[in-house]
Length: 336
Image (cartoon, rainbow, N blue to C red):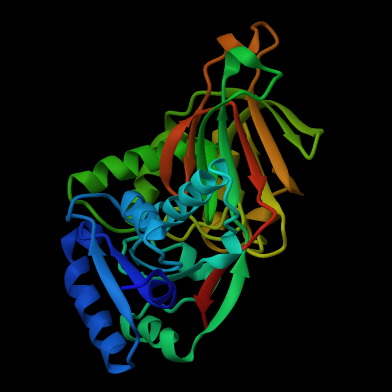
């Protein structure tokens, strides 16, 4: 097929390992609706020689500009990264490719599916598939996440880059993701995984220290339990750490939980699931275009302070220091 034809055709990237390997059957159900509605598409399975990110990046090179992430939040993340790494590669080669040229749709077959809760994509397979004939195109921000070299600070020497479609975190938030992902690899599923991991790490928490700078202004310095940074409202299977975040306002919402007594934490945890977490007076809240988190201890140089793990869309990508920043261009998304 000509490249121009592929630009109009959807490329479905199917994570065959999602939903305890039930994703393929769920995709077949969605596929029947696409065929019925005459939606042009090609399906790529992650088991056929690559992961979702690599498959997406290769498909971009073949001319595809419209993608369907068939899976959960991890698949959405991987498809976005495939698009972004393709764009960055083309820019290095001197070619002009814009994020605004790409469109992302989601058939939600994962366990958490937090991205769709903010974006408005229906959880029901048939209803999400119907968006290809009666949905609309909206825009959402994308966050660039740069892991920094602690030995080079205050210079921001980048060690690794990732991209975020929903919510990320530093500290306890990322430790919870590590535990949940290990349990998922053992075949376990369900929201209870997130609750159990959260409670475990609250009980066994170790204080961490960091300095946080938003748009060049220091907003926090000291001991903390966890940080969440998001353009979406939901993470961790339904928790709302950034309940007032907006996906297309060009801003990142930040919620810092400072080190608190166990009695206070126990009383406030339920608010994580009710959308009222931002009303907890002990929190540090901010909204900005860029956020830098640097491990901090008055007694040690930055390079000697162990950095907490960093997660992006539920995937642990490395350790602080880290910089989160909103990209100037937005991604097209298919929604209600």
